Amino acid sequence: MRRIQSREYFSGEFDLPGDKSITHRAIMFNGGADGEAVISNALTGEDCLSTCQCLRALGATVERDGTALRIKGTPRFRSGQRLDCGNSGTTMRLLTGFVAGKGVDVTLFGDESLSSRPMKRVAEPLTLLGADVKTTDGHAPIYITPKTLHGGSVQLKVASAQVKSAVLLAGLSAEGETFVSEPVKSRDHTERMLSAMGADIRVEGNDVRVKKSNLCAVDVCVPSDISSAAYFMALGALKGETLCKNVGVNPTRTGILTAFDRLGVEYALLNKRVSGGEDIADILVKKSHLRSIELTSEDIPAMIDELPLVALLCAFADGESRITGAQELRVKESDRIRTTAELIRNLGGECEELPDGFIIRGRKKLRGGKVDSCLDHRIAMTGAVGLLASENGGEIYRSECCAISFPDFFEKLGEKGNGRGHVRDEW
Ligand code: S3P
Image (cartoon, rainbow, N blue to C red):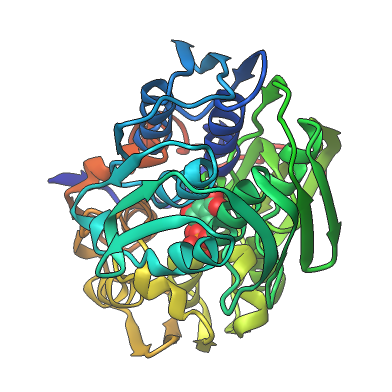
């Protein structure tokens, strides 16, 4: 159990950990590429360490020095491996696609939460490309046996970067062209990185085509994760002023800023630049009066991991907010529609579950109380923000799971943030 004091002010400048999605991809793709690469500012949270372990088992060399990773890839994977993906959906789904056409026997398994998440969504399109991918009643463990893959056309029913990436990675070892299309564009880090590594890949709107290609190792400097920065951005909006530095602002990831626009949060992107094919900026946020919002299915993919936090902000807003089209939240590390609604209610707010989202009746403040992470890192961090911004603070149970994506979250939360003053004069 961890006690979180309520604070009247929260201000400061923050360096956040590396982006989880980009780190996973940099490890995995370089692990299967020709040559050596260095990944700097890598996220060393538990999920990305699971990816490191899997690539080592497949024959790559991965050495760690702080947040730098040196990878020596192997285009030929070792057969007969049992890969432990831990809690990480990205590791399991992307790797399933990556190894499906590599001529190896592989089993992928994970922890209890990961073993309850849907895997048919990856197995089905890969089978269409000729792969032999067997799930256990639609779940992990997943068993892969060697098959020669051929290209094909896959229309995704839900926007999912993990499934899209699995198909594209399988397409790298398939004869002919592999086409994948999704209803709304999900994060496109795979497309950007594969292109930088020399793959024959073309993107047109929500459609992507890839042809058989070998990958060449590339160094990657990972930007800070907007999904981790979001907690500190939210604290700026609720309690003072925060500056989050070197944050990845790839447009497929900035849904939190769309939510901020509608909520009426005052923010500015400073020092905008492009590095390693990804957009980066410093994000300055200041205390704002929040109004109620509406979000629908089109808005969801670009803020999928931030939705528990967005729902919390709605509870601090004035009026009734409605979030729909977010049924994917039901199959994340926890059922995040249920766990977010419970979290808000435990803090004294009003939140009603819908099958695909929430209705939140904002009351401008929350009392505080006792919250449980339900072993979901994003629920733990959302709970901590809610308690810190509440009237009385409170207690959070099973908060250690934030190490999945943000190992020093609570240190960062405690290290600064008492100042009343402005961080920057850029307004
Ligand atoms: C991710 C894609 C998203 C996201 C997850 C990371 C990725 O999952 O929720 O945290 O790195 O590709 P879905 O593809 O299931 O939407």
